[in-house]
Image 1: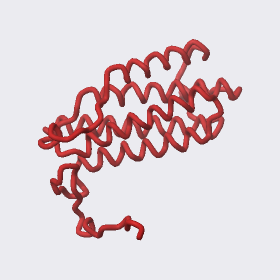
Image 2: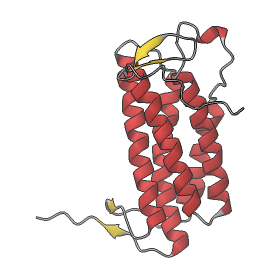
Image 3: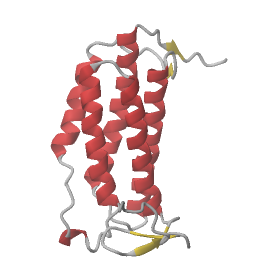
Image 4: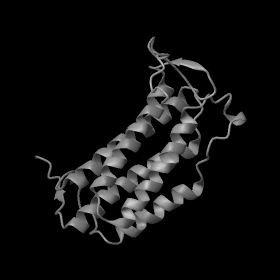
Length: 186
């Protein structure tokens, strides 16, 4: 017999953190890791639109790190030390930075702000960047309100949004899509 996906335990608006602590589904911790999950799903959509093998491989690595981040955010911070949750590492941030540098060498220097668009893959990467920024803001809000968030998570999300921006430019470059500079109305 197949395992049922629904448990009905959340029907009253509560859910459990890893470790068993019950919290309302409106709790900032739930919103935070839900946004990381949304980002992970959207990166999967972006990956489905890319052709470049290196970029596709990197996005799969990023999805793995986002599961790690989601797991740490879904934990009851008081019980987490007793559980075996995968760790994010400084080398994960360094990898993003090296990929940003590698792609930046191949795209023309920016001379103005760039409007998202030109190709569905480019636009999708910009949406992923925006979701990433929201996840980062929620992590900061959770941390500032007294909830535990590993500072490396915030650093990783900050760098990831930079990576997604550069990847959008790099993808456009590979596709031969011309960037549209923002020309403010004066």
